[in-house]
Structures are given as structure tokens and as C-alpha cells.
Image (cartoon, rainbow, N blue to C red; front, top):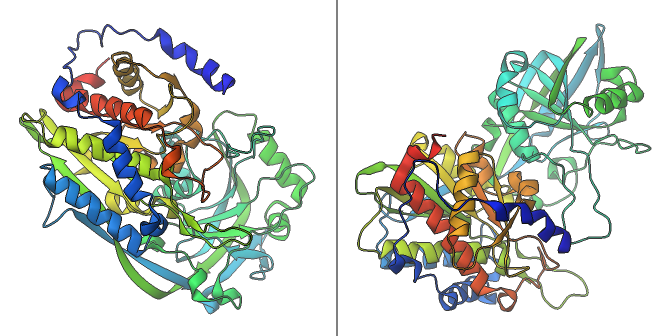
Length: 516
């Protein structure tokens, strides 16, 4: 904790005198007084109660939470964007069509056919598709931002990319923190971007740590085992069209592509010395690949959306989001509690969203531009709710000025808050509004490590300015012990107030804030 606070100290030097010539328009005092810890506690205690059974996506408990949020939006004067407050999307369980699977490597005109699943396994994030004699590229290093993918688009078109998972960076004995790479993108978002810029296939290897054997990752495909269809994850119905064919490969396939595993390791380690993406052609190496799915089950789940329409520019909007789902019920041996209530993750963020909805929705004078509030489902399943929102948005995405995300905002030191943000103008705005709080936070940057792991990342990948409010991991993260009685409700309310202040400034001033 001391290290976390020391990292935060440089933020205390932030100027409180404004953005150059831009005039700040204070959040009305009457609005600020509505951010009550007792109200936040009421919301969290319902959302994180055993009655909702952990709010898994999909589940009856998730639907009860959706009804609760939608009813609150209605009572507080938010308007729906359609007939009701729900933005529904379809989920499916898909299994592989066993006979469709193929991976063949051509090197120097000689074919090597992968045995599936012994030498190559369809990855959990794979899409469906087919390619023949596609050129292979090696992609190493780590992107600084998504513009690097766009800059490489001419070389990526029609190619199959050999990619590694991120290098693991261990952090001593601190088991409350995830092992992460510095990149801001999850593997799923990284692969989706590659597909957007023309990649037809990805061959994914584990990172070649010294002395580590490289094997294909195993995934519980019933078509490749005796497992039940019930083990299949729920996925977006259209997700097979926005991802390339992705195979997890091991040393046999690597040797077929690079000549030897050692040659592959050398490429990876050399690319690690460059602080950007590294793309290398593999002359004379091509691949054939194919994969198809069969839908086994279908269902639908909602995001919950409400809007406070702006007075002068209602077509422009700020979006504030929080995911209201968690991981549901997971039976475990030697445990008396199988309900993962998810009080901090993310009933806390949802409660913050409700505080903002109540305060702004009931205020007599709306802002200049609209404020849209979205409770996302499916975050724990791979950001599928926010992906569905972006894919079939009820509002033009080009009119979204910024996305503010509240995820896990109720634990750890009372005065610590981490933000993840890329745009300098938005960072400065958060810092400035923080200094205007009665009790400012010590702002840290731990959230940068998790930037690709929550719903804002989907918007950031579309070029929408985004900021992630996060109070850090703890020993109850993704455990049944994440209960409502461990939340700091005063802190939760202060984080929500800060997010509301930031959203209000953007809604009042719009693109003027983005001008240096």
C-alpha cells in the first residue's frame, strides 16, 4: 500500500486553476449533495445479495438486477432510447464442427499438416472462416496504442499472424494483484484489431519463457472431447464474424513455421527490445486454415440504458458505464459459500452509476449535451455487453465525446483512487475536478495495467476518449467473500461524485475541452 501511495504523490501537484482559457462550469451544489453513502449502501446490498445469485450472464439474478436498474432510471426521470430501458443482445453456445478443422503450413513448398487437437487447438476466442496459401507474418513487441495496428494495415491485409501471449511479469509474493503485461489491450481486443485491419488468421503461442516447453493451450470443446455442451461459454451471436480463425499452437507447428523453436525464441526476444510493435515477413511460408461452428443454444440478455437529454446539443453525449454482472454461482469443494456476490466487482460501480443517475436525472436543469448511463451485462464473459452495445449502438458512436467507466470503486485505502486514461486533456480534467472535491483523492495509475480488461476498452478501441475509475484489487477479488459489508460507502460515493463532475464538464463544454 505504501508503494501505491508513493506512486500517487506526483498527482498532488496538479494545478487547480483551470484549463487555460476554458471556463469551468461547476456541478450544481444541489446535485453534489445527492451523493449519499447510505443510498450507495442500499444499492450494493441489494445487488450483492444472495437473492441475485451472483448476477451471472445469463441468469435469473442478472435479469432481476436489470429490472431494478431500469426501474430506478424510470423513477428518476431518465428517458429510454427505445420502447424501454433495455438494450438486448443475443448470446449463443457454439461448438466446433469437427470435420471443418484444418491447419496446414507451407514452408519452401513443403506442406506440414497439424494434428488437431494434439498439435493445434482452436482457441476460445476464435472466429469462423477459411483461408488458403495466406502469407505468414511474425508480430512481436507490444503496442503503445491502437494506432500502430492501423499503421500496419497494408501489410496485415490477407495475412496470418504468428503472435505470442504477453510476457508474464511476476510481482513478488503479492497474490492480490493479477500478473499483467504493460499493454493496455486484452488478447481478445488485440486479435479483434488485427482482424479489423485485414488479418484472416492468428497462430497463437504461449510466450517462450526460458526453459519452458511450448504446448497448445487446451480448451473444453465438446467436439474434441466427451464433455457436455454446458461447458461451452456464452458468446455474442455475431462474434464469429468479427474475429479471425485463431489456433493455439505448440513446438511442432512453431518448428514448421520458423525452422526451429530456438529461431522463434530469438525473434521474440529481439522484438522485446523494441518499444513498439514489430512486424516481420516470413518469406516462402504460407498457411491454409479452416474452422466452422454449430450453434447449440441461444438466449438473450440486456444492457440497461437511460439518457438525460442535453438542452442545446442533445445529439452529442457523454457515456457513463458500469458492468452490473458478476460470475454467478461456482460450487467449490471445502467451501460453504458458492455464491460470488461481487459487491466490489461490480455492485460498487453500478451503485456509483445509480447515484449519478439519481442526482443528475432529478436535477431541474439538464446539461448542454446529453449524458447517457449504461449498465453493462456480460463484462465477466469477455466484455460482451459493451461489445454488443458498440456493434448495435442506439446512438451514433461518432457523437460520443467520452466514455467514463466505474469498475470496482469501493475498497482499499479511503483516499486512494486509480485512473486509466490515454488522452491528456481528459487526464487533466480528472485531476482538476479531483482537486475541487472537498476531500481529494490521491490519484494513482494502477488502472493503466488493467486498461484492456473492462468495458471502456471497447470504446477506446473505437477511438473514443475513455477514463477508467478503479480502487484496486484485494484479497476478495473474484471470491465468494466479496461481500457488501466490506465496501467503503463514503469512498464509493466520492468516486461517483468525481465521475459526475467530469461528465458534467464535458457535457457543458464539449469539444472545447479537447483543444490544447
